[in-house]
Length: 619
Image (tube, rainbow, N blue to C red; front, side, top):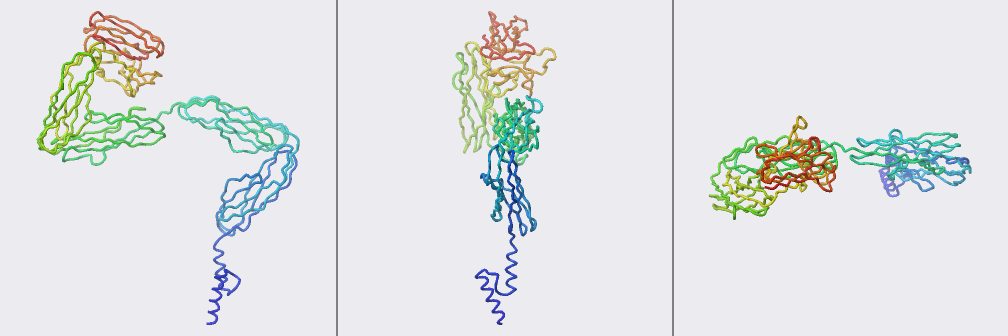
């Protein structure tokens, strides 16, 4: 019992005073085992450095020892008497032991002395410790070593092509006596390479090298350079090794995919909304213009995506459709990339089977005001539609036009049987043009497909008609044969001669094409808008005219305008020569008759770039 009380008393005293020097042998053993569980740094020391007198600069090497009594990770750095601190470094001990670390210091300029300089090893973690300071003295001779440096580019000094591009540099350093040099490389973009040391045991020449990889797509780098700089024992600069880089534009590849979100087959109450998701992927920075196509011929407004780097972006759209009792099998939406290249996704197809509705819908459409107008143009026509339902329903509708345009889809809510009025307008008319039997028509889409009677009108505009293609805004695109029908030109086609560009079609080329500050009418291939731009064009007028003027730009060749009657008899030809690609003032060609005999004309020069600014004609 006394022995037990003695042990207990000693244990309490040991815990209160944190002493390992009293009590029994058993308690001593417990406390020693707890202390050994934490490893520690037991020694940090640094070697001594001899004094040196002689030619400078001089490299001093330092060696330190770090001793640990168990596994640990040590972080350390080097301190210097000039205030410099080396980057932190990590050292791993898998077990107790001693590890060696090293550093060096090259310094000294001719005729200078450096007394009491030192290097010191500092352990940062797991516990901060400092070694002894390794102190040294340096006395540099007054003799001046002559140093020269010459830098050159290895290979071509001018490059045009794919980027980035690597340039290699070489420098020769020549001295007339033993010396230790410290040098670096300077660059025209202000970057500096890490300092390096080179030893000369005797007079002579040594070569050092460097490189620089640079260049972004479409960028130029003129008069860029690298230069060798000797830092010690004296500052010496080589001549600059200059070069030029002209990087070509990267060809960016674009892919597109489209899917139906959710079920792609539906049977039930209509209208039904289908949601679609598209993914556009590029392999480099670019601007993408895209739209959505539908199986009913509708096209969504064009949208733009910016890619700062390679990657993918998601785009979405939807389609609400379905009339009572109707089926829509194999309908689809498709993602179309327009620029920087024409890409079509796979079609995202769906099937829709609508149940029968009992609500009956009727429609009507009329022109508000005079439906036969002559005078100044453009003129605005107003239209009114009436939609009648015999019960509660939701109606979606749109307006159709004789020029193929379709208005946005709108929605009407009928809480009970009745009629609602809807309105639209159309402003049109080019000077000197006629618009016979043009019309607007009301189309109910859901809950059932219904077309009103057409609201027909006639418009006869005074004066000559001018179509100014330089007013066009948007991306380059091809034109259909009837693209200018609303302006009084029944058709526009290419006049193919032989096999040269046999697949060329009319095209609107956007501002910037071929460096032009304006947009213009030209020719091209489908999907290759910058090819086949030198094919003559044929214009057929809706009604014969008596006078035609064409403003154009182009090459220093004769561009020919030939006029024909309705029976294809040649009325005559005239030519005009452009001031080569001078956009300060267009060149013109004119053909005029006393009466309106001109049914069609051709204009251009095969293989010479066609750039038509405007066409004016008068009846």
